[in-house]
Image (cartoon, rainbow, N blue to C red; front, side):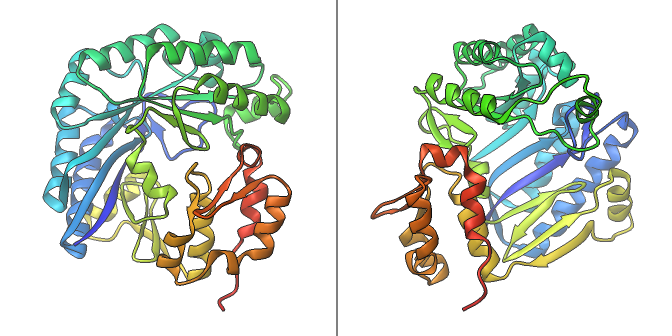
Length: 380
C-alpha cells in the first residue's frame, strides 16, 4: 500500500495581509459550507482512484483554516479518514492565526485529533504587525500561544518573518528572544518576500518604506542561528527541538509523494505534478458538476526529478545521501555531478563526505547559487 502526505487548502481569511500573494481571499464566508462539501467530494474521488492509499500526515493550510467553524473542520477531517487509511500516530497539523481562536476552539481542535498547531505570529512588535497588515497584536500572539498550551497542544510551531522594511537587528533580536521565551517546539523563520502587486510591494515601489538590504537580512539569519542554538537547525528556514521536526514538510523537502485538495492545491504522486483551479467558486462549481478540479498536469521526467530532489534535499541539514540517491535513481551522484560538486566545495558552499553532500553554513546563505548548479541534466 502506497503512502502520501495530505495537504488541504483553506483559501479563506478574515483580511488579506499586505505582503501575501497566496491563494487566499477575505469576505467569502458565503462559500464556506459549499467549499467543505467540495473538499470532501474531491478527497472521496481521490481515495477511490488511488485506493488503497495511506495518509502519513494531514496538513490544514491556507489562508486561515481556523476561520472555518469547528463542525466544518470536523467534516473535512472525517472526509480524510473515509477516503484514506490514516496512519496511527499520523501528524495532523493545522495553521491558525492569533485573534481567530479562543480556548474553547483550540480545545475542540485538539479533540478533533489535531496534534500540531502552527501559529502565524510573524512578529512580536506591534508596529511591524501593522506594517504587515496582521489583525493581531503581540499580546494576542502570546495569548494564543498560552491558550494552545492550556488546550493540550504539546507540539506548537511559531512562524516569524524577518528582513521587514525598517526592521533593525535589535528589534529582530527582541522578537526572537520573545519567541524563544515562550518555548515552542518548532520555529519557522522566513525572510520577507516582496511579491509584485501586493500592497507592501507597492509601498516599497512608491518609496514609502525601504526594502531591507541583503547584508542586513543575512545578519538577521546568522543571529537566528546563534540564538536558536538549543534547537536543531534541520532545514534552511526551520528549527525544532529533537523529535519535533515537521513530518509533513519533510515530505516536500525529500521530494516524496503528496496529494493536495482544495482551490489551487498542488499534488505530486507517481511522477505526476498536478494543480487545481485557483478561484474557490470555480473549484466548488467543478466538484458540484461532477467534474475534476484539476487545471493542469505535467509528467516529471527523470532529469527534473533528480534536480528537484537535490534542490529540496540540500535545504535539509542532513543533505542528500549517496546511498539514497543511488537507490532512487540508479545513478551515482558523484559521477553525475562531479565537476559541479568540486566547484561548490572549492567555493566553500558545499561539504562532501562519505555519507553524502550538504550545504555549509555559507552555502545556506547562498543557497540559490548552489541550486542553479543542479539544473536538469539531459537524459543519459
